[in-house]
Structures are given as structure tokens and as C-alpha cells.
Length: 146
Image (cartoon, rainbow, N blue to C red; front, side, top):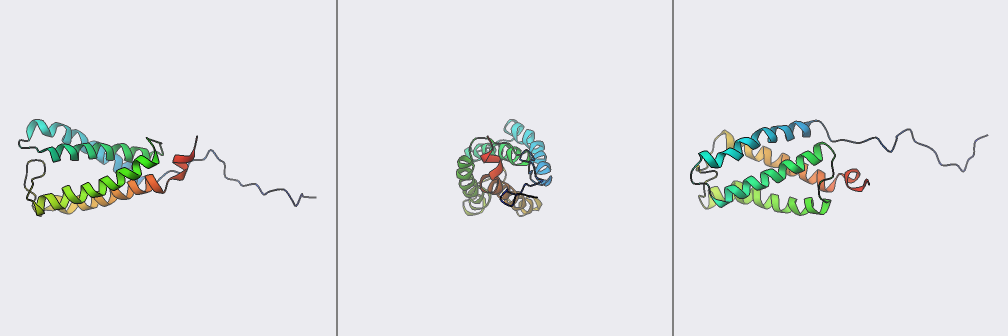
């Protein structure tokens, strides 16, 4: 006879990891391929502004976050990435749209034009913001494991 007061047991083990979709790993590797291009750019492009160097720093932070999210690794604290999300959204709006079109500030030494790169940037921004949001707010298993 079964004990009716015994709690039911689940087939799911505690050690099993719930990982993000493989798309985020590919997205991380795409960013990692772009990084060397941005790192050597200061040696070949004239007229880089301080804003371009800040953008390079935010891109490196984005790569660190993408690695943590794609591979379910705890990097810094969730509160850091929540604050970084606010900074990143503000930076994307300012550097990607307001500065080049509102104040005519060039990006990486070139004036912004409405071309294919301008069409691709918002897609990368939206995906990066989504990954940052999922990593900082929607990944409790990453932040609560010991």
C-alpha cells in the first residue's frame, strides 16, 4: 500500500541545465568574429571620436554578456546586468540614432547614411537588448545556483 502522505517525486533531476536556444551561441560567435575588426580599426581609421571608443567598450561588454547568456554562465551579478541594460538601451538610442542624425556626429570616422548597414544595426540592437534582458531578468537558474 502506498503512503498517501508522501510527496510525489519528479523525473527531472536538479543537475539538468536549461540552456538558452542555440541561436544565442551563434549570435555570440558572430559578435566574436566582428570584435577583431573593431579592435584594429583605430589603427586604420582616422578621426575616431571618444564616442567610438565608448561604443567599442559597450560592444565588448555585450560580448561578455552574450557568452554568459549563451553558455549559462554567471558573470558578475544580475544587478550589474540590469543596470547595464539601462545604460545599453540609452547608448544604442544616442549613438545609433540621435548622434548621427540629430547632431551629425560620424560613427567610426564616417557619416551615417541610409544603407544596408543602417538597416542591419537595429536588428543587432534589438537582439542584443533581448539577450541582455533575458540574461539579467529571465534566467533565475543562472543566478540562483551555488
